[in-house]
Image 1 (cartoon, one colour):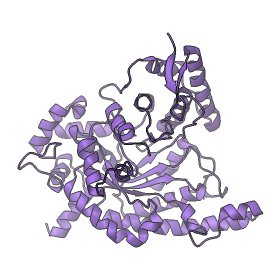
Image 2 (cartoon, each protein chain N blue to C red; image 1 turned 60 degrees about the vertical axis):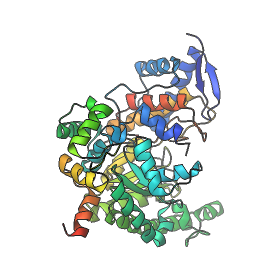
Image 3 (cartoon, each protein chain N blue to C red; image 1 turned 90 degrees about the vertical axis):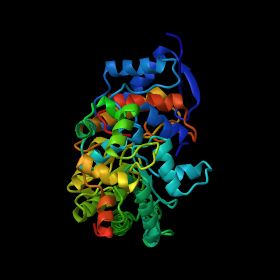
Image 4 (cartoon, chains in turn red, purple; image 1 turned 45 degrees about the vertical axis):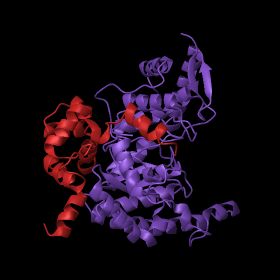
Length: 110
Length: 348
């Protein structure tokens, strides 16, 4: 409950990692698939991306990193990996299983 | 220091002197410590809260490097709820690309596992299409909502009618039967959505119907984890302690009635949950300093003992966020910042 400006947007600015503007979605994946607590999850992702922990929430640096690694970015440029394509790359770069990527491979006989 | 601007738990503005503000902070932490038998906040922590509220800024945030992951309950419904007419996949994209969400949850407007069972095949293709177009991890979520299993909404005698008539054994027997059916429904729906590709399953508002509700969620989690060892399950609570509607239900030797967050999280871990979402309810007639010191005291104890990630609930009406459809940003940003700074947590 509560309107999205007060809830989702306020928390995102006050305490959140910024989602795809940074590496919030990637740290979330580390937490969800490996059960890591926040610091361990940040360290894991920072190590895989070869960035520092503080750079994980920097939108300028992370946009470059995300574009280089083809793992999805806020503004989708032509020929950049998007959606499930980007998630294939996220799975490889982070060395974690992504359920829908595995299902995609199974359904397409990959 | 002049008067400090803050609000009551319903969002009504109020100005307190420094002395009044500190008295409310102390009363809030004492209340939580007394109820849950956990340590009170230290003087340094109370001073931190006082200084943060004394700031004239309308918005405050955590220090760089201390940001955490955000998970959402019923997120896809919240766009439609404010009258924006988009479908659910578009709502997910709005959260992902416009609101900076780290994760999102697909859900149905009838937000309980029981009504989802007959329509789950309509839900699966929506999730499957959403997963092709989005990037952030997607949960599928709903509530166990054991209230739907008793008459007139369900098959079993209603404990709320049996208890006032002194039929305690009959009420307990009814609750035990609801657990069995609810577990089947949760496991069925969650299995379908996981097999469609969900990144995680959210059991939301757990414990809303008391100890049987919590037990059903723990057993369902255990069964899902046995079936799918890699599955991510988030257990998000409904209230700050487990209501003893049955009173004698146990999980692996621990009585559920009356448990607070720091004990709930141990059982969530034991059942196989990946993330635990503890709750502290906001009291509308007390001030925000009272509510915030109280909420942080409960959550701090939970974070200290947790062996799995915790995401304290900070939605409207919990975690010192005022009970109002439009919670003020001055108060929400302070509650968000203070909770993240003082509690060993992993997300909100």
